[in-house]
Length: 85
Image (cartoon, rainbow, N blue to C red; front, side, top):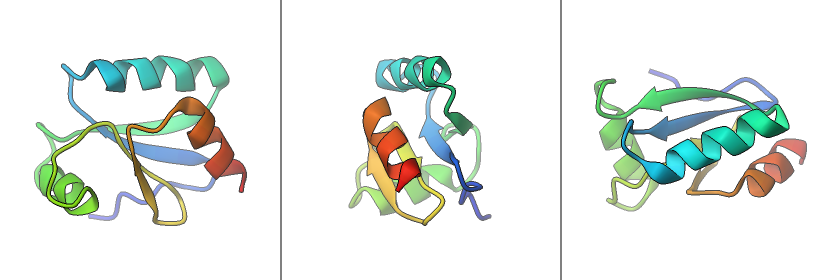
C-alpha cells in the first residue's frame, strides 16, 4: 500500500494511546493542516513500515510527507515548514 499523502497534507502513523500523537493532531487541527491518520495497531503492515522509517524503532507519531520523506515526532511548525517548501 502507498501511504504517500497528497500535496499540502501529511500521513501520520499513530496509536490511540500516544500522547505525542494526540498533541500533534490538536496542533495540526488548530493550524488547519490536513492529515490522514493511520493507526499502526489496526492497519496491517504499517507497524513494520514505521520501524523501517525509524531505523528499527516503532516510534509514533511518524509523519510521511508528499515528497516521500518522513519525520519522527515533528512539531507542528516543522510540519508546516516542510509542507511549504
